[in-house]
Image 1 (spheres, rainbow, N blue to C red):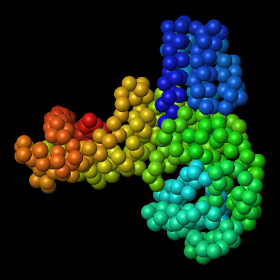
Image 2: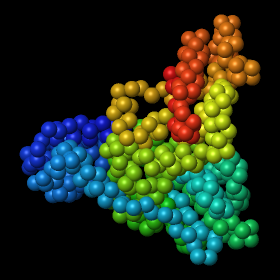
Image 3: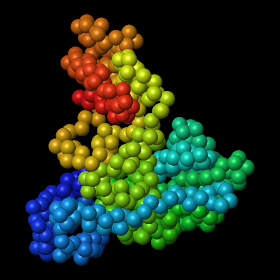
Image 4: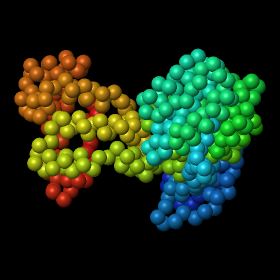
Length: 442
């Protein structure tokens, strides 16, 4: 997420290192690079112009404190201005005083609207809500079928009616939700390949009949400036309440995230960071600004860890480590816990300073899959007693996992080294060791 923009901004900040004071000359040189980096990231040029002016007004002539370098100070100023640009604080979903809360989801075809609807339902379910998905896209072949499949995956009901108009389906779904004690109705509307009058009239009619408490506009972050133009067109007709950016885990340059709120003056509420139905994050402007500037996002990383951390398993694992009984079976369980937190690049991007390492190191996302395949190709006895794995067994494991014998040897060696490291931990530090375990990645 934002890797290219982050690297270019860091290159611009290097120009200020070693300076004793931020002057008009050196700030102009650095901000010229910042301006270029933002424009390359497809940020709206008017937004860039205003952003640079705001930073320049705050930066010029400021004395550098003893504990700061000019580079650190300008990063702080840019961070503060970027947080203001992105919205300053997290914007929550509105909740109706009298259920059900109605959420209308709109956007172009291909923006990830249907998948987001399911992700949002899953997210709200995790918060203790009882959502209902409603498919009113009667125009796109198999659109409602897709929503039903996603609903089954997350065990959330989907309201559908065949051979009925979109407006009537939406209207009937509200009554259905009340009768079946569903406190949130998420309406997935139809999309088109481009904004057209027929599409807008249908969405407006659904809005008028359902009176939604929240209208969310879903946009593909990879579309750059087109995302901003589309957002303006939808906002003029629907006056939506918030924006959802999808596919931020892909090859997006980040321009949409930095432009949309400034242009339409509506908050970004969620970001999609993967294909899985749990790959949805609330949008925190300060955290995103920190990621863009290469400062990491430890708070989100800790929240993800806590979400997937099993206290009972950790205590059991801690006991095994104390008794030197840690096996490949335990290792496999921990590996799966790490995978639940997201891709390696996402996790590394939340750690301060790791963006520089990512720039110089190619992250092999398939390495975890290879490690898991190797362990799964072992017998139960081999997982509990790796010392019995001789040459013949290694060849069999390699063949069964589709890897090379060298890969098996490397994993066995790294596992042995990790066991030795664990034995060196003192009893009082064992819990920290469990929570901070690292795994072979290559």
